[in-house]
Structures are given as C-alpha cells and as structure tokens.
Image (cartoon, rainbow, N blue to C red; front, side, top):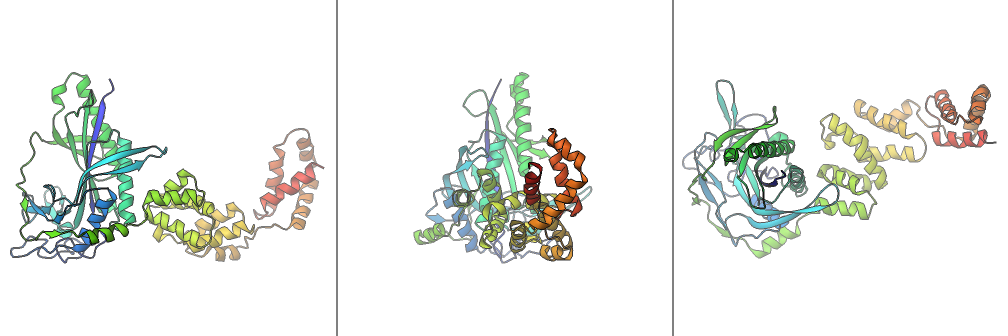
Length: 478
C-alpha cells in the first residue's frame, strides 16, 4: 500500500558573517582552538548581561522578508529554560511565543531539477543563541564554549513536504540564500548547518504519528534518514503493528544509515518560556524594514534567470553555477574578463568543479583565477593550442602553481595551424600509407581517423586537428 508521507523541517543555520556573537562581544568566528572565542557572558558567569547585536537582527529580518513572512511590530526575546551541560546559564535566549519570532506565516517557492516547482510553507523563523558543543569520549566528555552565544537562525517549516528529494532541494536552496545574502558560510563541515526532521505516514490526507529525528548534520544524512524512517514506519504498519509507530525522538546514525530511538515524546517539554528581562523590547521601524528589503541581493533563481535569458546558458548549467555563490561569483568574474559565457560555463561545470570535488577544495583557493582562465581559453579560441592541450595546461598549472601561458611557452606547445606546413605533412603521411588509402577508398572509412592520428603523432599533438581533417578530406576525395 502507498502511504501519504508528510515531512516538516527545522533548519538551524549559524550567522557567521558578524564580527561578534549575538549577545556578547566575543569574536564570532570558527576556530579549532577550544574555548578561544569566549567572554564571561557566554559562560553564564553571574552578573553578566547580554547586549543585542543589531547586525544579527538586520540579517534575521532580511531572511524574514525573503521568506515572505510577517514581521512583528516589536522585537523581543524569551528564555527557554532547561538544564544541559552545554548551556551554562541554564536557559537559552530565543524567540518562541507569537509574535516574538522575527518572521511568521511565510512561504518560498522552490524549483526542482526538472524545472517543476513546489511551495514550502514557513511556520516561523527566529533568532537565538547557539549552545556550546560537547564531545563525548570513552570515559570523559569535553565542552567547547566557542559556539556558545553564536547567533543562530532557526527556520521551521509547516508539515508540507512529501519526499526526501524535495526536502533536500529546499535545504540546498536555503543554504544558497544564506550564502548569497552574506549571512553565513553555511558550511556543514564547520557545524554551521544542522537539521531536525519530522516524518509521518498515513493512509489518507490526515497527519500520521510524528517521529522527530534530531541534529542531522548533512543534507545527504537528511535524505537517508527520511527514506529509512518512511521504510521503518511502512513496515510497522504493514505488519499490523500500528501501535509501534510511536511519537518519539530518534537520531540518525551515519554508519548504518538508520535512525535510532532516543526517547519517547508523548507530551511537549515544558520549557517555561518567559520574556527575557535583560533585553528591552524595541519597535521595528518601517523605514528600517524598507532599507533591509532594498538591500536584498540577487538570489540564486534571479541569477539563474539572467544566465539563461541574457547569456544563453541551459537550465542545467545555470542551475549548477548558481547553486553555490562562490561558483556564481567566479563565473561573473569570467564574464567581466570578456570571456564567452558558454565557454566559461563549460569550464566551470566540467574541469573546474570536477577538480574541486575530487580534491575537496574551495574555488577561492584555486590557482587558476578567472583572468588566467580567460588567457588560457583565448589561446584555444585563436587556434594556438587545442582543447586537449588547454586541459593539460589547466591541470599542470594548478599542480605546479605556474601561469599556464608560461608553461605553454616553456614546452613550445603552440599548435601548428599553418596550412602549407600541414599540407606538406599530410602529403608525406599519405605517400607512406598507400595501402591504407586503398582501404579507405574501398569503404573502410575508419581509416580517416588513422591518418589524423598519424598527423598528431608526427607533430607530438601540436597539429591543429580541425585543419588536419579539412586538408585530409580534400586530399582523399580528389
């Protein structure tokens, strides 16, 4: 039996592009040195008071606008009370009770790879502080307070998604939006993105029993967790064990690609929310909101439309390029060098992204800058080198950290395009291969490639293959 699957997401994204944390003057930055970015307020020391970072509020309101949410008239915060070692104050400063969240009742339209669209309904987006991070070892647990107080945006969807693929497509797009708006690097490797996933299945349009999967740290993990949970719940129902689909909290195990029970969740935990007394509420002015709205940059889908309509890129190529802001920025720098858009797209979606993926590398660290890539592709366009030689130069330049044109001169890689020189060469090849010419004329047309290969062999790959073929056609057909 086919069941109706319903998915809701809670996406946590750290704001990484502010100088300081959301309620303290500690540096907001990733560091591998534990407890190096902290102030007394992050540690929950008595007598310390939080001071709100206005830039965090601006970024939160920008995201609220992008998600077509309703903003509150007044901004205020609340205390979420619970005890855990990574929360030294014994409470988290957050926003929960309407109308506290910075945005409520919004939506965003998402485009699938096949061009179809779906709408994701947003319950709320709110600004809060992150907790410290804990590492559980064999016989001890350690706490790193660097993350304590880091500004965090929590985006909560309504239960409106119906497949693992759509859920991941939505999350990937939102990550791009955070990057395009210069709010966050949104790097899951640095722990800047985490997701809670709610999954239920039912035989009709009504919601089934909700199962929550906590703190999934990768989009691939989200996809696998949802697929496993659908399979697990389906098997329980089809085996007649309806009562075993329990409202509970589970965790995703990356090694086994399964979800594992943590605790039951029959009733909501009473966090005893109350208004944070040390941060006075303040009015959000319409003028400020207007300025924030006007400052929203071109988002991925807008750039994609430009790349398709103005530069003639395919939907696929444009989609690949806009997926990550750094890639799109590199593409636009290539255009600023007067590089042909389709040529730039072909290099980006081919050799460049392939190399970056294989070497787990950031494009900003790539030795081949847009300027160097333009110079290289110009040599190909002018016929000075072949496409194959161009790719060889590309990889060699990266490995040797040397300008590709310098390598080209050092190795005398200039392509032979002179018609007189190539005609003489081909005449020589044909005179040496009379038997192969006869075979060609008797119907073995694949011998044509043999002659081309001989020309490339004799010139060590420097003959212009296009001109070689043109001359060969004329000679063999006369």
